[in-house]
Length: 211
Image (cartoon, rainbow, N blue to C red; front, side):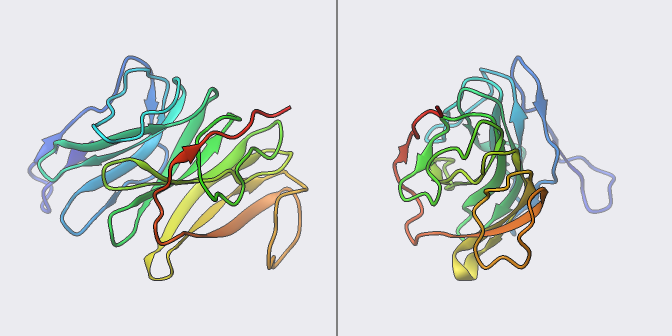
């Protein structure tokens, strides 16, 4: 990660964020009004840094999010995953600086939060997940979103005024849960909105493994 001055002539910070494996970032990061920078991606490192109080679940091949302070210090780093590979896309912020990401997962055992609209994987292929973290990086919201085909999360947006997030991705599932659908067609791009409870943070529960 690098920060450039407005005129492009100075570099206030340049920093690596990695472990002993491979890290990748496929979507743009976002900044808050104070100049903190937030980023999400995927990692195969078992030793990618995780800050105190942040989610550190996973076993390599996991998604991760991080916050870089205006002076280049690592303010928060969290990882998210199960026994299979995950990747996180986004992120998006709400007014309280909760951080949301869109995940693609091949795991049947990622942690989901209590009251999740879909607490278990939809099938034997990949699933999408909306994922949220609080300021400390603790898992605040997680739910599967997928059917019996391949489902992928790609983009996420936050709607703080209505306490909800939106997910955009791809699906080949013919049994993906639809509600108020403008078009009911399998094998397409999907758009989904998730309502968040006022107290988003909840103790994560582990879904049962797929048969």
